[in-house]
Length: 254
Ligand code: OAD
Image (cartoon, rainbow, N blue to C red; front, side, top):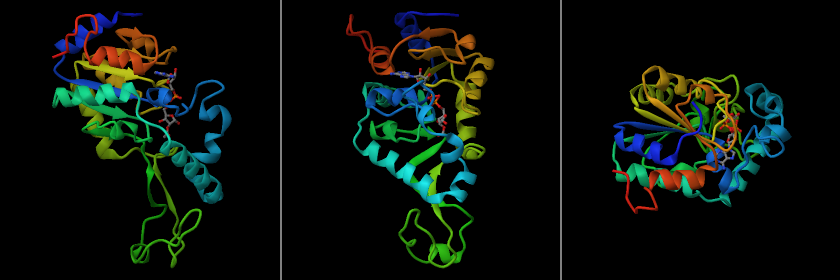
């Protein structure tokens, strides 16, 4: 199916008992956070994922990878949630239990927007964990400062708590996302190219279980073929209009 009107999607939202919003980097684009695969501006157009987002890259060049994540963290401290993040958070608060927010983003902007509950499939760029299974010595005191910090005794390294290519997603978060996707009447797929699995597989799960799928994106995505509707445009404006009700009537979705 192709383009649909926002009025129709608002009706689908009204009718739905359970809604999943699956978000990707595009939902944060209007906050000034670069996406990954957009030509020119995407991070993977400028940097190599093999050199920066794999465990083997980190083991080979820990400082280079660590510094890249520190730079991304620092860039995030200067950005704010946009109207898309805020509209999702307001909707979830107005409709307790109706919306499950599943994000591929590690930027924490949904959480900063006040989203009551977020399933973050790919982790959190502001958090760290041990690279190797921690031993007693790792927990014995604060890590030795450095780039990256390390255990003063065994040398175990701290690493960003994000999911790198080739790694499995946190099982509890993925299974909660799969359950919500299988149970939803409507899935909003916002700002993702649909190129990365298992996240993109959630859209197939929703579709197979009979849920409607609506894609919000200014560009074509790999999931357009299985969508019930496409809303073309930036998510900050579209989500504001969809989720906060129809500005023409002043009516709120209920
Ligand atoms: P991509 O960079 O693959 O896709 C971003 C999508 O956002 C594209 O489809 C754009 O058209 C769309 N977009 C751009 N501006 C937008 C706007 N204002 N409003 C709405 N959409 C907009 O990012 P993801 O699909 O999130 O993995 O990438 C998935 C995963 O690949 C990421 O989580 C990351 C990456 O490697 C990890 O970090 C593990």
